[in-house]
Image 1: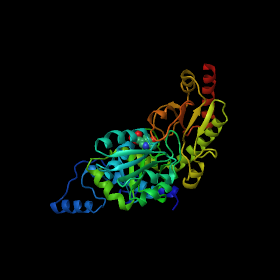
Image 2: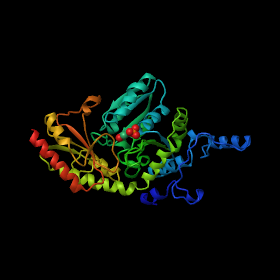
Image 3: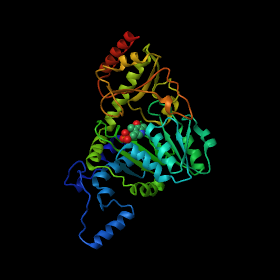
Image 4: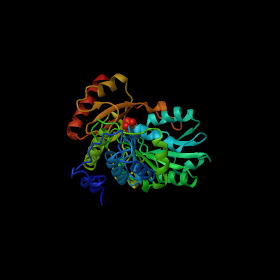
Length: 391
Ligand SMILES: *Cc1c(COP(=O)(O)O)cnc(C)c1O
């Protein structure tokens, strides 16, 4: 079956719910058992990995509806939901790491994931080394006997370097390390992590899966080999996501394939237009043929989302503000993946250690939503007019 079909069908069981199309929202903490024998049997089944209801925190049919669909689309064994994308990143890491372990982390990783390594993991005696996202098979030189996890994110969600994940994974596996990936940019549709050597794939479901900027949610999907480790680590830290949020995520997921196609098309059109603007120094979008990571993107990815950055030609802050303030259609705000366009300024130079980033040409990140690109371009054009007046 193609993804467009899977996304409609996966994880749904109308036959078990009076024909109701979507899995209902089960609010639950206490589960009542009719007998001691039933209680013991259900806990035994759950310990074997079966999807049985034992306690609210351990999941309900609402949870499994989303988890099963994400697992199928990403191509993994099973998925666990988390209350945010960051919770998914943090708990995937802590489930696989112990004191004395070493982790290799891509230098362009999502900022709060980096902060988790530098604070919590450090406090528990796990050492993090950051690596150049372009390292490829050269990561071999950074591997140590105690390297337990190699964490990837491609493209980086501000600077858009593309990593050669299959090359990194091959080295990591030879040395017995687990390969994790934050796969939020491409979503489960446009990158199939398990076909490229990834063992543990993370989604900030908050972004494209939810798709409407109104829910925090994360998912972690693993291979069969690594499922038990994730489960053991995550359940003992009490990770659970509320049923209303999970419901909204599975509802958003059903339309992801059509939304994402439009985000891709709109994003590429606006990116191409920006490339021709005299105010723009460079456009960082892996689907554009002159992007340094374009060949990797073409080789491994099935599409592009609507998130990319531009570097403006060096300009004073007030001119940057004149460009960004008063845009009508681009909201100024963090996060992305919703139906609406967003713009944000970022300075990646402050949190890099393995590589450097020169922000002389200031970085502006855009999320291209589902509006008409004619209107979006007109909005940006007005912004550039304000910028030029402020120079
Ligand atoms: C937003 C984001 C996260 C964190 O997700 P939240 O749901 O906001 O906690 C993790 N990774 C990437 C790449 C993100 O963009």
